[in-house]
Length: 479
Ligand SMILES: Cc1cc2nc3c(=O)[nH]c(=O)nc-3n(C[C@H](O)[C@H](O)[C@H](O)COP(=O)(O)OP(=O)(O)OC[C@H]3O[C@@H](n4cnc5c(N)ncnc54)[C@H](O)[C@@H]3O)c2cc1C
Image (cartoon, rainbow, N blue to C red; front, side, top):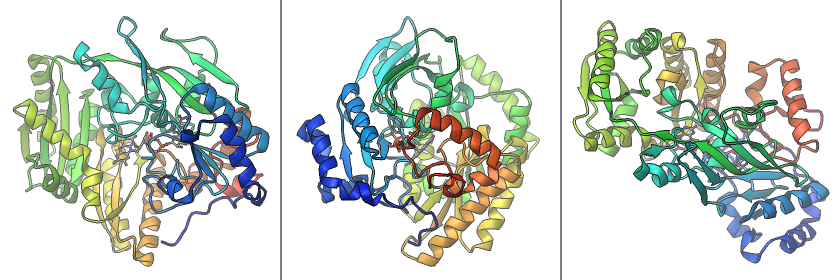
């Protein structure tokens, strides 16, 4: 694949000191927490943004906050870059290492330390998977709300790194809205605690700042997250339309009428076909666009909300309305939606874009996306969090065809520019990483970026944490 995105040049001095750095790390960590063999480093060379790969200098897999702090202190003293890593499911290349970096993987720190129902929260290590928290608290009638489709694998540390969202974040908010406290290792190995179990803490909202900082301000080792009581009932309902524009306008008008269901997810025809073939979810096949709308509460509450949504949908020529009739059917509907990326991977390589637009622009941006895809002679499947305006065009291409790969990247960049130009932004939930780094100048002025980089430098004066991400190389003085 041709590389359109440039990495920082590896620091030759660090590479030349490779063996002494590895010996230094070996003194800090037990043998089974350090990987240096090239073959064993391969699983860490990329993440879910698979177009780009770099082998790191070494991977460390600490088991305690103290070990993380020792490794960070060592890297600080020897100016070795660090790339924090959870499960490596980032779609923006956030966890892709660079050749002179140490990857600190949090996967061994995967314990739920405390479930505190009186305070409706759980204290977890950063390597706990997203879904494990809801599984642990389900029998008590609680759950952790943000639900990325990757929730079987992705970690809370990675979710905080990217401020991740999911289908049910329309009602419950994304990671930052469900976070109470953090334990974090700073650039010099100091460990800090921020926040607590009380709802709001005095002083600056540093948790808000750190959530979404893409591994550039420190390494999170523990988090306290909110738990919510499970609703009395919930059901997804399928709304089919003859045009994407009708579906887009329906979303705009549902939200505009003050109706907030738990989720409004969108699929276009290619996405419906791909997901139905995978999950047999019962999606209508004679429509061009599908909305999965989930309502929750008592039967009466669900019916009342559904009535209002159907009224709005009728004004946009809704063709099919199909309620799930059982928990089994509801699970299949969500299985289809949440497997969309994996199911797409069965038929083609794909690049998943992640732009967000004001709801009033949904229909316009869907149309514009189709034009861009046509211009490059590619195919697209759209499946996304419509209620949040968070679009995910999956651009289909053949990674073994260099020309088509470049076209796919260029089409993706054009779509993201369209989102910004429509009053939206480059990312809704996947982060900037390396993928959208060079488009940050399309979103922000030099002055805006200088401010952000100054805040970053206050947390990481040497820029050793995940250095080649988020900020375009040309606006950085050190690159
Ligand atoms: C099939 C699929 C579906 C997806 N669906 C969604 C979705 O619905 N919603 C969504 O938001 N995302 C989704 N994603 C993207 C991805 O899963 C999220 O970004 C997720 O939060 C990444 O978690 P991770 O543990 O894999 O982190 P990684 O990919 O390992 O890392 C992500 C970023 O966080 C940083 N980081 C990781 N751990 C720490 C830590 N402990 N301290 C500091 N920084 C850290 C990394 O340096 C990196 O910048 C999907 C991905 C896939 C492959």
